[in-house]
Image (cartoon, rainbow, N blue to C red):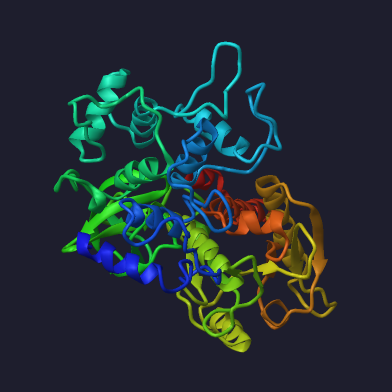
Length: 469
C-alpha cells in the first residue's frame, strides 16, 4: 500500500460513509472541523475509520483540544484492542461508570499507563508530548531505557515524531488531539511515517485458514487490500494488539494473528486420545451474502458470527480434530445445504453460531429435542457445556439451554446446537459483539465448551485446553 493511496482513501472517506465497510452500516463520519486540507486529516480519518478515534461531539473532532490521560488511554486501548468494558478500577478517582474506566484499567494491567503513589490516576490531567512519547513507546514495545528522552528518540528514529524548530522535542508542551492522532497513526501504520523503511519484516508466519484478508489497519473495519491463501508464508514486522503487520510479495498490511501459525507445517497439539483425529466438527456461521441476519447499531449479524466462527475454526485447526465450515466467506448458504454439507463430511458435532435480536439481553444455546431423535442427550450435553463457557466468558444474562425447532439442528443427524451469543440490538450486548476482544473470548468459549463435551463423553482432551490459553 503506497502513501499516495492514503490520499485517495481520504478523499473517498470525505464523500461516502466512513464506516461503509464489511462490518458496519453507520452514517458518514465527516468532522466539520477537519476538512481535507487539515494537516492531520488523513491520520484522524484513518483512526476514525477503525473506531480508534472518535469525535469530541457528534459532528466535531476538536483537533486543537488538549488530550487528557483518560482520552490517551482510550485511544491507545482501542488501537491495541484492549478490553474497554466499563468496570471498577484500582484507582480511587476512576469509578466504574467513567467512560474510560475499562481502557484505563486494561492499560494499567499492560504496564502502558500507571497511577500515582496515592492510588489515583488523574484521568482529566492533560498529557504532554513527553508523556505521549512514553505511552506510545510502552504500547508498541519500543526500547527507550525508561527515560523520557529515550522515548522521544524512539519515536523520532522511527519517523513517528520530529523535534521542534528550536531542536528540542518540546517534551513539556501539552499535546492536542490532532497531534496525538498523527503520532498514533504513524505508530500503527508505517505508511504514515516521515521516514521510509522503518520496519523490518523478519518473523515468518504461515496462513492457517483458506484465505486471509489483508487490511489497511488493525480491525476488520478497515478496507481489504488483498488476501493470502492457506499455507502461504508471510513475513511479520510487529503486532498491534492481536493484528500482525505483514508483507507478502509487494502486499503490506494487517492480518489477524489468530489466523497465523509459527510453523510451515500445520501441527496438532499434544499427545491426546487417538479417537479425536476421527471426529469431524462442523462450524456453521449463520446467514451470509444477501442475508445479513439481524442488525443493530451499525453492525450485521452475518459478519459478527463469521468472524467468531473463523476464530473457533483456527483454534480447532491446532488440534487433531477435523474442523469444517459451512461458510468461511461472506456468502449465502441455504439452510438445507448447511445440513447436507454436515452430513456429507460425516460430521460428529455441528455448531451453528448466531446473534440474537428482539430487545433482550444475554446468551442462550439451543438443541433439538424429539423423542425419536437419537442425539437429544448428546445435543443437550454439548449445548450445556458451551452455554456454561459462554456465561463465564461474557458474563451476560443466562437465558438458558433450550429446545429449539431450528432447521439446522432439527434436520441434522448428529449432535447439533445453535448458539445465540448475545442481542445485537441491545447496546450492552452489541458492544461485545462488535469487539474483537469479546469475539475472541466467545470463540474460546465455544472451543472450550466443545472440549468439555468430548471430555464428558470419555475422550482425553486435557492437552488441548492449552491451545487457547
